Image (cartoon, rainbow over the protein chains, first blue to last red):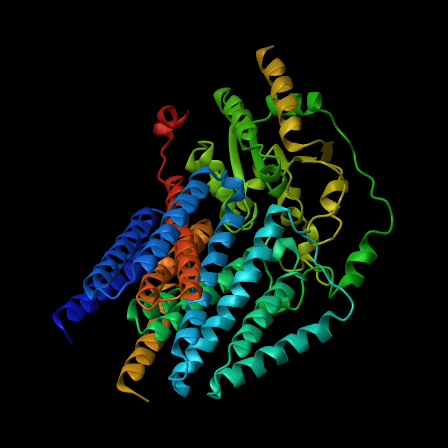
Length: 470
Length: 102
């Protein structure tokens, strides 16, 4: 090993150390920010080292420098701009987009190596190249579809078409054949193209039939896949920092995926087999037979109810995030607390679009951290709650989850029905992602206010002000 | 199997184990930021984009280098920025309210 190589190896080791400790620190809210910054320091070290290695090798063509630096510059400008400007509600799809390009980059490295190897790619070294291209290709197209579904550009509904199973099998066979041909030694760019295109199509087919509610889990799974693709890219170019970081993300991402699926009471296998309401459609159709009787209310009545309550619990859901009504909800809460009313937020683990997403959204509008109550704490408070204000949440409050035999059985829920009175702000009676009617809406102590979360809250704030000022 | 490949394989397997181990139960509050943070770490693929640039000597390879660099740079720069923004939400105390308001 030359001196430079020794230094490089040691620097990469320090950088790998930063990633591992960084992930470790990110497990607690207090140290999470420093954890991420430590991992960033590791990244900078690795980039400086490889830059130094390239310069000192003197082998890089001028054109290669230009395209490399141009790509980096454009990528950094685009990445930082999107990350800075994105509203917190749209973070999930942005993460998915970043994941897609990461997988794409890994796949491109595999393709590059296969093209340049021409004849001297040994059997054993061709395996990582094949895996890199295939996994990278799958995560690239799969994550792009996930981005589309989360942002509403692709329908969030599970998309199924006749013959999908047959096509799936054909695509898998194509991938296996292409992989076998690439590994068997005879090099041919067509094998590579076949593997790449089949993988891209597979990523598409894998993600399309999955419903929007399950997307977070899919994004997390694809994130772990990208980690593996990057690790294989590390084998391809014989760089250990890629192997360590990639494997770390692959493993940690897998655990994270399982935990997320757990929080949503879904199994990863079920999700991949094709979401809610497709496999077990009989249960959802059985429940939407008879029209449900509900009591409607108005912003004026809600204002009166809130102004004379002692304890108010706000239950925010996806509808709140979709309507961008975080500011309004924070304003209403402040109005109530300023007048001596206790206000808390009951945060379901999967409220919003991803586990923990609602906490981020509310923190963004300066809701005090101690008002955010997690599932168990919130459930112990509902019996003392005068008014539960459910805003755009549905499945996470559905008492049916306590019974067996329906798609949401066993899912942890917020016991909103135990509070003295419930007000549900919702746009319509439509069901949530699970496709199940919510008996909470027809309870005697539940009143429905059909409105867009933002507009509805503005009206409620106005009427509450009137009653409080009386 | 060459010694080099064996070493890489050992590193790979051990890193997987570290990944499983370091990721015990995390609060759901942190799951989204954690995913985003892990996403940023696999942006290390940018090092790979540098590495292949050394071998590029025709137009096809230059195009591949460009896309590898572009994609990886978006992943790494965006990934860290958005994770940092998300985590910044957590350490904001009620007393900072005034300054945080735009």
